[in-house]
View 1 (cartoon, rainbow, N blue to C red):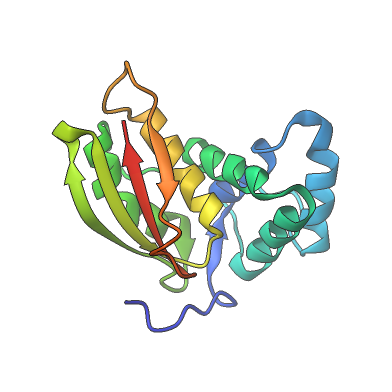
View 2 (cartoon, rainbow, N blue to C red):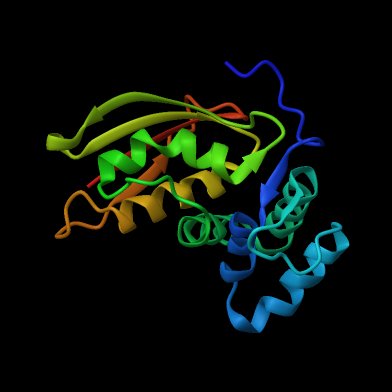
Length: 178
């Protein structure tokens, strides 16, 4: 398990950070930009790096102002804007490379540890333990985005749930079913 996460030294890629903006409807983009600016994050650009601690503060502000559904949308958009490891073409690839995806999009420290607790693709179920400082709803959005982009079954919409009885921040237990 990660001993301690020092978010003040970690940086997040501009690619991943851009999910923050694309996760909002156009009519709220000005408010989203203001919250970023209030947290020392001006105009994120792909290929640049930004303070992760400031990003977490912006996510906290969004959660307080707009609720968990906005955090969930940001997580879903992260899959479309973040750097995905090479060779990911299937749902199983995406799950097996999720740790690597977090590592590619963050630097100067480990911020995430992922354990596959159960993967029964033939039965339509995956259970993951994710330890990171992201709000649970952001992680749920990321898993939903991955499930939709690399769907294991095109005839069924994947569902991602947080096991609230077994989750205790920063440790989250997530079940993906389809």
